[in-house]
Length: 229
Image (cartoon, rainbow, N blue to C red; front, side, top):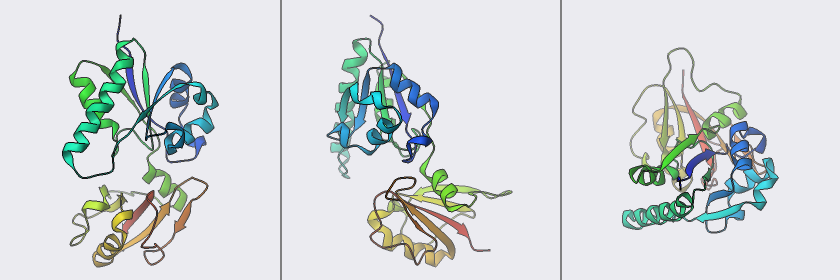
C-alpha cells in the first residue's frame, strides 16, 4: 500500500475569507485533519478553517498537543509523538492535513514534525497562508518595505536587550509575554511602532503608537516597527 502524504496548510491570520482556495480544497478533498491543541474544536486554526469549510466538522480530527515550555527534551518528545500519530494514518495510505495559523513556513511547529516525517521517508508538502505580519500591515494601512528597505521578522521573546541591530523595518512576533521589555527596546532604538492584536479576528484591536500598546497585550499581538525618518 502506498503511503499517504502530509500537508502543512496555513489557514491565514484569522479571517476565514483570507484562507487560500488551495487550503480550502485540501480540507474538502481529504479525510484526516491534524489540529494543534488538546481539543481540535477549541483550536483557533480549526475555528478559522471551519468557518470557511463547514465540512471540516465531519472529518477525522487528530489533536496534536505541543506544550508551551522551554524544556528542549519535553519539546522533542512532543514532536516525536506528533510525528508518530500522523505516521499511523500515512501508513494506512491516508493523507493528513495539518492546520496551522498564518503561514506554514513562519515560526510554525509543523516544521519540526515535517523534518521527522521527511527523515523517515514520508512525503510532505507545505501550503502557504497569509502571514500575520502581512495581514497586520494591511490592517494598519502601511507598507512593510519601500524602495531598498529590508524587512526583518524576529521573535520579540528573544530580543529584549539592547537595541534593534539592523537598518530597515521590523515585524516583531511572539512578544506578548515580554511586551514591556520589547516596548522599552523599541523606545531605545528610536523606532515608530504600531501593533495589531488578534488581527482580522472579531476581537481585533489596533494600536497606532508605541505608547498605546498595552503591557498586557494578548498572545496574538504583532508589532510593525519602522525607522523614524
